[in-house]
Image (tube, rainbow, N blue to C red; front, side, top):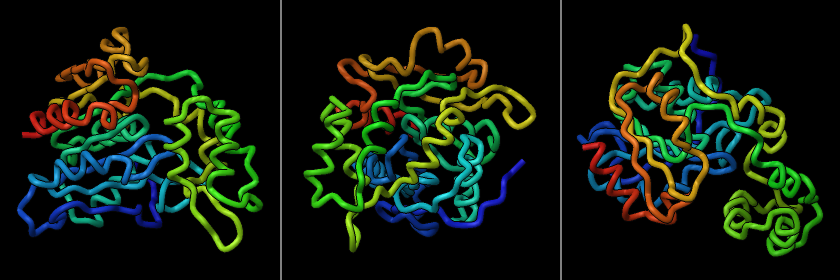
Length: 267
């Protein structure tokens, strides 16, 4: 069942991203707390050969906010945006949360996905991993902070990892009075349990028979060996690659290796 969608997702186009360019389309889907520009390096590399469309997922970046938020509903919003862009079968690359949305899109609407790359996420249910992030983001009174440095200092009181703080700071937007987060933080917190849920075969999710490339970071725990069995149930033609020395942010830490794997797979 396709859920109704009322507003367009925000889309960034790289290269000749139009239907007349003759280039095959690629859709990029970012992770939790992110936005389309997080995959900007990948987009620039792909844009030489592909028409690249980087989506801001619902409740993220410059896309519309809503109270409801599930993996399936986000897949439906991506589908609706494909229709509005006039895109039929597309290549899709999704990282983290975007990878789960991409997997759901492929399982629900297999005719719309040509090839799929899933970066450092599996179709399983994950334990809560973002409590410190939620605490840090929620503790800041953005209407009364004076500058970005004050916000970052407050974040670092709850979140030890500097790279995570810098990543979250990309969401900070100046307003006439104070700042705001571009993402819909209350909705993400409210629906976080739903976003952690795994995928399974049912009336809306049928096994995806085309090739799927799963890329894991060696130092990340998001894709474990024991996840391969359930992954192959949903995606029988899965290919698994691991990037040495990379963590969950594999596309940013090892861009040359990551981009080479993606380009070779999409050919």
